[in-house]
Image 1 (cartoon, rainbow, N blue to C red):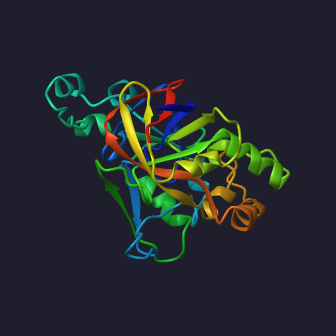
Image 2: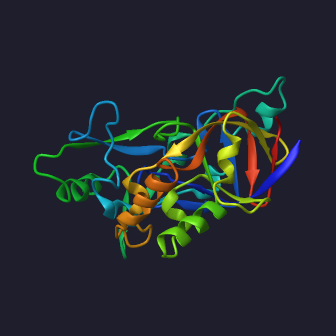
Amino acid sequence: MTMVGRVESLWRYPVKSMRGEALQVAFAGFPGVYGDRVYAFRSSAAPQGFPYLTGREQPHMLRYCAAYRHGERMVMPPNLAEAQALEPGVTPLYADTADLMVDVETSPGQVLAIDDPRLIDLLREAGRDGLELSLIRSERALTDCRPVSLISIQTARQLSQEVGVELEKRRFRANVYVDLAAGAGFGEDAWVGRRLRIGAKTEIAVTDRDPRCKMITLDPDTAEANPEVMRRVAKGHDGTAGVYAAVLVEGAIRVGDEIALLD
C-alpha cells in the first residue's frame, strides 16, 4: 500500500449544474457522495440519453447557490452506525424526504425552495421559447458518468499555467480534490484501473479519465466563459482532466485523509 496523496477538499452539488458546497466530511456510498446531485431539471430540449438542463445551456445556473435546509442532517445516512455494526457491512438508508429539501439562492435576497414553481419559471425564461422543464429527484447521484469524481490541485495549477490565467479549481466540479504526494499535474491519470483507499475504510476503483466539456470553460463565480481552457485540455491532454471512480467499500472521507494505492 503506497500513500499517493491527501484529500485537499471535499465538495458536493445538491442540484446538478448549480453551485456546490464544501464539506469537512462526506459519506462515499455506492450511489455516490451522500447528498450529491440529488436534484436535476429535465429539459424538453435535451437528448433522451442525457435529458438534463445544465450550465452548458444556461451558464448562470452556476451562480445559483443550492444548500440543504437541514444541512446537519445531511452529513451521513441516518442509520449509518447501526448498519455498519452488522456483518459484512450493510448498506445504510438514505435521507428522509424532509431532510432532502434544498433552498436555492438565485440572487442576493431571493431564496426559493427547490420545488417552488417560480424556480422553474426563472430557468424557463432564460431558455429557448417553448422550453419545458420538470424537477427530478434521485437517491442515486445524477452524475454524468461514474459515482465519484476526483482531480488533483496540481492538475488545476498546471492548466492555469498552460492557459496563462489563474483557474479556480471549482470549475472542475469534482467531489474530491487531491493534493498529490508527487506534486505533478495529471498524476492521477496513473490510477486508472487501480484501487485506492481513502481514510480508514473507503475504497474506490478508478475507472476512467474524466472527459471534459464546455463546463470547465465557465468561471464558477461569474459564469463567464474562457474557451481557451477547453482548447488546452483538448490539445494537450486528450480532452480529459481528473478521473472517475466507483465505490467498492462505503465509508466516510474527511479533509486531510490519506489516499493510498492498494494495487
